[in-house]
Length: 104
Image (cartoon, rainbow, N blue to C red):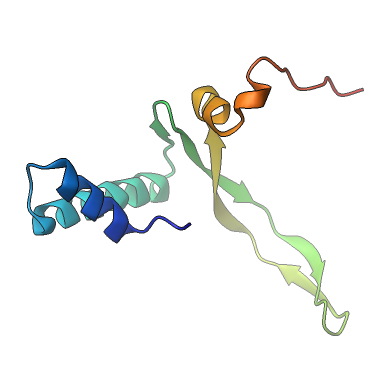
């Protein structure tokens, strides 16, 4: 199942207190703040959920998979997400006490 901004707005409405329009503005403001913060190069950390970062990737050689022609992949910025420890435990309750194996 995919959760949309409308789903978030509807859930907030069911929780009570605000109208649909006010909830929509609230959800839009949250996502706009996250976008603007990331665009400025800052990290966004949501306690108990995870952290969004911007990663600068340098240009690199690549290949067109259709015809095999070599191309230069331009430098770019990408958003990365790292889940918090508590979020990982919720998603993987069977692994709660497990630690990742050390790299050999």
